[in-house]
Image 1 (spheres, one colour):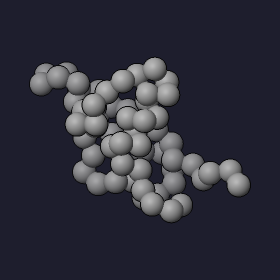
Image 2 (cartoon, rainbow, N blue to C red; image 1 turned 180 degrees about the vertical axis):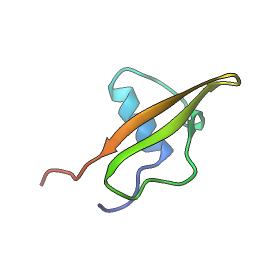
Image 3 (cartoon, rainbow, N blue to C red; image 1 turned 90 degrees about the vertical axis):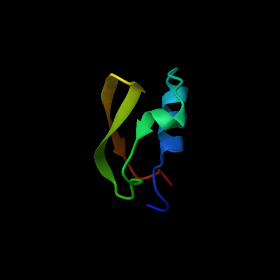
Length: 61
């Protein structure tokens, strides 16, 4: 894997699924730099949050 998965990458992937969020909603301690299953917190409102699970896979060549 080259690079890392950032808040912008998550927002872009969600947008392709019809979900529009601002990148400040995605709460990441650090960018994801490893393949596999990961989770981030979405801070939707001061008192409302959700966990988002996602998988980072290798790109097909």
